[in-house]
Image 1 (cartoon, rainbow, N blue to C red):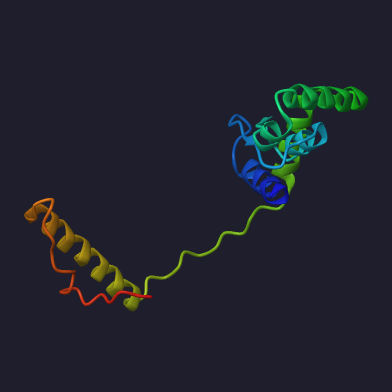
Image 2 (image 1 turned 180 degrees about the vertical axis):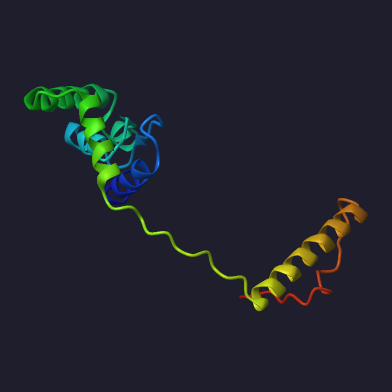
Amino acid sequence: MKPLTLKALRTLRGLLPASIPLIGCGGISTGQDAIEYARSGATTVQLYTSFSHNGVGTPRRIKDEITQILEAQGKTWMEVVKEGQLAALQGPKPEKKAAPQLTTELAERAGKVLAAGEELIGILKDTPANSTQTPLTSTGIQPTS
């Protein structure tokens, strides 16, 4: 999970202004994990699983580990975050994909779904709450298995 969330953070950080904070979460159980999230553009981090597995001392332990790492590097948390933001802005931009084309078949299927929805609304309006109704048949939509 952690590699996916780090990649998502780097992508989002490259697309969003630095004024929008991003919260890193997923796979943070050490101070080094938290620093990785900051380097990927997270403004802050969130703990959940490690907190529930390791108890109430977990946030303090991770904070102490972060402090040790940052002191050894001579940096602050926000300096690491800003480096991550800068790296994301300079990194490759995701390629824009063309929107899928609406085919005739897809348009017809969408029309059938809309018609089924309208028929369902009509049935619900005309049916007492405890009554049964016949299934939707006029749209030609067949149930799939």
